[in-house]
Image 1 (cartoon, rainbow, N blue to C red):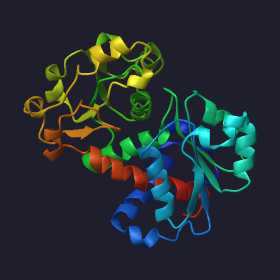
Image 2 (cartoon, rainbow, N blue to C red):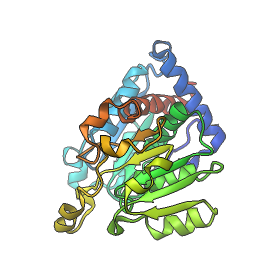
Image 3 (cartoon, helix red, strand yellow):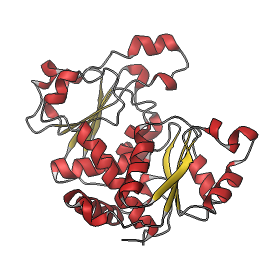
Length: 307
């Protein structure tokens, strides 16, 4: 049963439970009108302790499209956090008013800490460089819809693999499926953390290689997951400026790629994907955004037990 549980890590749910969420999301995609009153009378709180546009709007749009309501704050300056209120007190208070909470926080583990005090389900909407489970569910659903399977895929992860929480979460999630190969494409300074290699890839004997040039491997890929070099994750601005243009996907590079390649990106994009690529049928990142709303609609419905 998924009802009344928290989602703090993509692996909190079994493959079978994820499939139930994805099957519901697919039904919503096919006929959204059938689900417009599913959460009538329910309230979602969005507690965002750091800035977000897409994730917050996606949660809010999901709840509103289900017929529910939304309250919350988009940055801590507009809440009692500025007065020194603790996470447990905020969660206990807000949990008295609402049925479910989506929480984003810059500190790793904050949503898990909050879950110990919450009377309602907590959804981790991103905690520092750690986890972003609903983005991972979005990525998985996009792969499911575009490739029709999770197994037997070669997945290229390109850009900032050191600080990118979406990359770390996706590797963990996809490592549960059979015959998946990862190609890790990044500058040396932004390579995947060692713990991802030792605790997941090596431990599960998953096939992977690390390279520095996208052109060397793009022809092998079934999925290309692009990421931006995140300025806010750098301590040294000079390093950011030096690396931010290292990996840009354009039409020329795509000439080498498979005809059925699926290009994903968690967004926002800076300049790592040229705008000319947007017209390519292999570009799935804006479709991915839409899928994210449908996945969150399905997730909210399952956690509240209305489906």
